[in-house]
Every structure is written in C-alpha cells, then in structure tokens.
Image 1 (cartoon, rainbow, N blue to C red):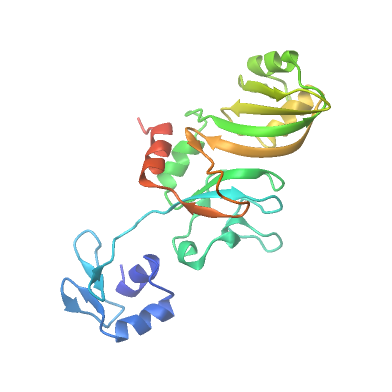
Image 2: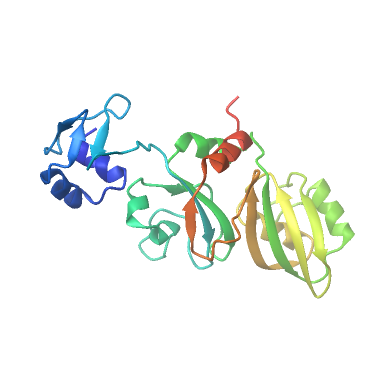
Length: 240
C-alpha cells in the first residue's frame, strides 16, 4: 500500500494533509526518513513512525452508534441523510458500513464496520443472532400476545416468523415491551405486532447478540468498540 494512503487510513489526516506531513521529514519507515508518499509499505513488515511515535496499524474499525430517527441505515443517498454522514472524517476514511439496517424512524444500537467477514457472520440467517428491542405499543399487550410470539406469528405476506421472546414491561393504553427476535425481515417488529392487532409507536434496538447499547451515547453519537466488545460480537457469530 502507498505510504500516503496508509497514513491517511490510520487517521493522520487527509491525503493533502499527509503530503504536507511527509515534506516535514517527520515520517520514518524502518528508521529511514520518507518524503515520497508513493513509497510502498507493508504494515505487517514495516515500522512506521511519525515524529518518533510508532503508528499502530489498524485494518478494521468497529463503531457503535445510537442511531437517531430520521436517518437511514446506508452509506450514501442522494436525498436522505445517512448514518455515515454522522461520522467524523477520520472514521469515514476506513469506509465503514452499517451491519444490517434499522428503519428510518427506529432508534438505537447500530454497528458500523469495514470488517466484511464479521458483518456477514452477524447477518447470516444460519447464525440466528438475537436482536433485542424496546418498544412502545398502542393498546394493551397481553399474555396471549406473548404466547403468539413464542409460537411465531403470520405476517402480512404469509411468512411465519421464528419463535420470539416477548416480555411485557408495562401493560395499558400504551404498553411497553422488550422483544428478542433471531431474524431480520423487513419492518419485522412492526409487522409482528400488526399481526396481533397492535401498532408500534416507538422502537429502539438495545442489544445485538450479547452487545448492549451504551446508554451514555446520545442520539446520533457513536464511539469505537473496545477490544472486549469486539470479542463479544465475534463470539456471538462464531465462524465454525
């Protein structure tokens, strides 16, 4: 990989800024000053330092976002604001993409990464990765609904959902629930409640596998996952 591209990918600035940095003579590859951005480097074989500090190679980026409503789960769109539009330039450089989708009006946990293998494993229907949602429902959610979800409900297109775990947090004119599903059909949570004659008025994903949303994140905020959290995701979707 070209040295200038690699430095930009590691968050040292834009390609233009990296070019200026190289001219200062502060960039070393294996102890030798390099001012030419076209120099080829292999992060697994070369040590790159900037102003005496080693630049740690980072191939993949893993981000947790508290997705706000009104933003779509996509990398780009000519009309709508996307979750990638909410990222800082230093993170966009890694070209992350959302792992799965949340509806435009749905809030909560969204993972963004450039790790295609992990994304594939997390989204594979064969893995049955549980996804946990908190929702507000117009009308009283009953134990009959709990039982119906446990068995699987028939959606409007005739599809029968896999068993889901519905927990009633509060039952009333506006009920509050938590729901764990292991598949990801289009608008699935809303359609499941529609199948039992009820309407979702608010929906938030709070967990994916064993990874829970950091409640300290405000809507639209995000942060990098810790090494431990990445391990949690990886253990949720083993490759064997």
